Image (cartoon, rainbow, N blue to C red):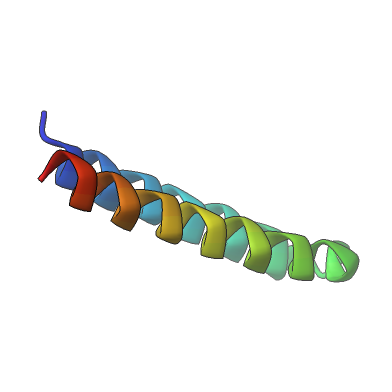
Length: 53
């Protein structure tokens, strides 16, 4: 399994988690943390892809 596939799967998982938390409406305070986590994940994924690629 390549790094790109892993990256896409991780992003899909994060999207599903975000939608699940957003759907309940109880996790309003968690939203900024999720956005930061997704941003860091994207940055880390792109950095790894550049280093390894």
